[in-house]
Structure formats: C-alpha cells, structure tokens
Length: 203
Image 1 (cartoon, rainbow, N blue to C red):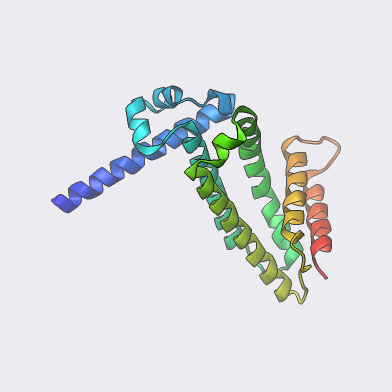
Image 2 (image 1 turned 180 degrees about the vertical axis):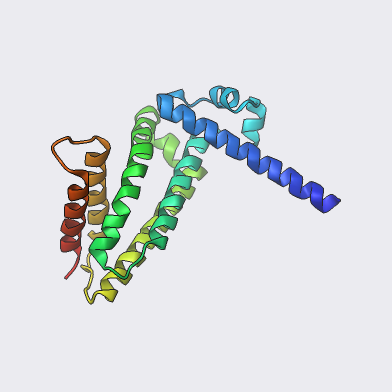
C-alpha cells in the first residue's frame, strides 16, 4: 500500500508540474514572455501560486523548463532520423522540425532576452541546465551528420564553425517557412536549402 501511495503521490506531482508547464506554454503563445507571471500561470492551471513555487523558483525557471523540453524533443527527433540516404536527405528531414521549433520558441526567447537583464539570465541554475540541453542537441546533430556523411562516403568539414553554419542555415530557412514567403514554394525551398547546407559542410 505504501508503494502504491508513493507512486500515486509521484504521479500527482508529475501531473501538476505538467499542468503548470502546459498553462505557461499557452500564456506564452498568447502574450509572449511578458504574459508569463506566476499568478497568471496558477490561474490558467487552476492551482495556487504556492503550489507553483513547489516546482519552480520563478517565471524564468518555468520558461527555461519549456525551452529544455523543446531542446530534448529536437535532440530525440534528430537521433531518430535515418542516415542511409546521406547528409542532404537528413537535413531535408530535419528542416520541418526546425521550423516548428522556430515558430514556437524563437519569438518567445527574443522577448525573454528583451525583458530580462543578462545578469538575471546568467546567474540562474536553470539557465545552466538549458545550456546543457543545447549541448545535447548539438551532440545529437553532429553525430547524425557524421554518420550520414560516412554512409555516403563523404567527409564533414573539419572546422569549429561547421555546426554553427548548419544552425544558421536551418534558422534562415525556418524563418522563411514560418513567415510564409509567398514567392517561394516551401517544398522547393526545403530541398534547395538542404542541398546548399550540405555543399557547405561536406567534401
């Protein structure tokens, strides 16, 4: 019975934390980082501010937890992509996920940076965790690219800027897709961008 109670309590705690994050995500979608307050999250989640503070230090902690989730989702997605068709096919398959994350995360992150000071952001333990999650995504992406290149008998450019170049390319095409540039066919843009990025990082 004690074991069952412990599992029930743990499950309830996870459900409350999940409900808090879902409420925060909805507020961010509606009003950006400025709309994210502990009181607003509690009201949206149907709980008390005191309960929110059991799981999160402040609103930045909630926001960073959402970013961590997004990075974990992206890392898992990259890890699941097939490598057999080579680098360009890998990147082409990655672009839609990149655009989805761009739509959800980038606008909110910009608002976060605009409304918080650098000291406030950098001193937070949660931001250290976020940097680690970005690192895990980078590791997953690098590993996938290396494997895809090896399978098709190519080599990746040996330069520290290689991965940043890929990120920049993904960001550019994601922005174009999210903002719906009417003079471009999305499928053609994705294919063109994937091959252009591939040419820039392989030999």
